[in-house]
Picture 1 (cartoon, rainbow, N blue to C red):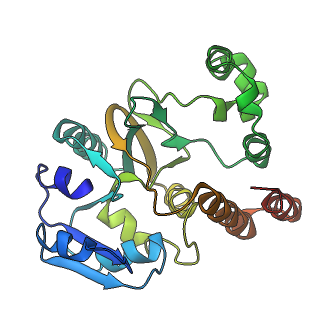
Picture 2: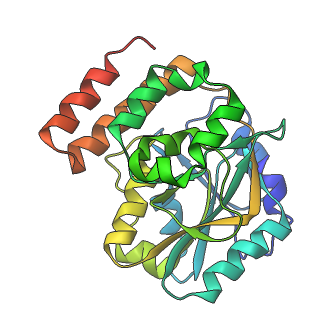
Picture 3: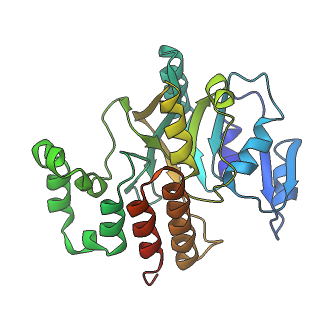
Amino acid sequence: MSLGSLRELPVADIVVVDNASSDDSVELAARYTPHVIRSSNVGFGKAINAAVEQFPNAEAYLLLNPDAALTPESYAELVRALQDDAKIGVVAPQMRYADGEPGISAGPDVSLAKEWLAALRVDHMVPDRVKRGLARSQRLRSRLPMLDYLDKGGPAAAADVAWVSGFCMLVRATAFREINGFDPSFFLYFEDVDLCRRLRDAGWRVVSVGTAWAMHRESTSTSAVGKNRLYRSGLVAYCDKYGTAMDKFSARALRRLPL
């Protein structure tokens, strides 16, 4: 899906990293680009780092999941945002699923309270209309930041956020190299949150562009249970790196919940 959309974009080079696929993915990718890296499944961040090393003189890197697609118009919005402010380290579009529903493509700082609410499926008990009202109440959000996770709608224009999703992001090459790219200790999930945190710590802006969007067809190569397991492991890794002793305990307790 992403290769087809990439061919429509004014990008200089396309690099595909194949993480030990068992189908004809490599042969298919070779029809689109000569830059195909065969690899064992080393994880998302480490694979991206390997691809980036092939082009040390690039000005920016567009990261796009194989199950995502970006329109030329939205790509132009991302490029424009990056060019308009030299302090922006990474920009990302809004996420939409195939059925038109919005996905979560950016967010505030990681909160264990929000993670517990999501894991306990509290959001399933609240009607969508009520969730949107709660999440967009600035007065409530100032007192209960955990309500942020109820709001899947992105900003109407470019907005500074704590993190943007690695499903689709345009990252400035100098910023990426300054922080040495992705932390390879994250296998999958939270490597994008970690990247954005280190960019912000280094003085770069992390921006979600409300006027750009990318479609995300979630991969079926990993089961829902498998994804949840990887997600919780990523959360543990993130809390191990940045959290307090209580955060680490809480993340491990959450990981033990039934999937």
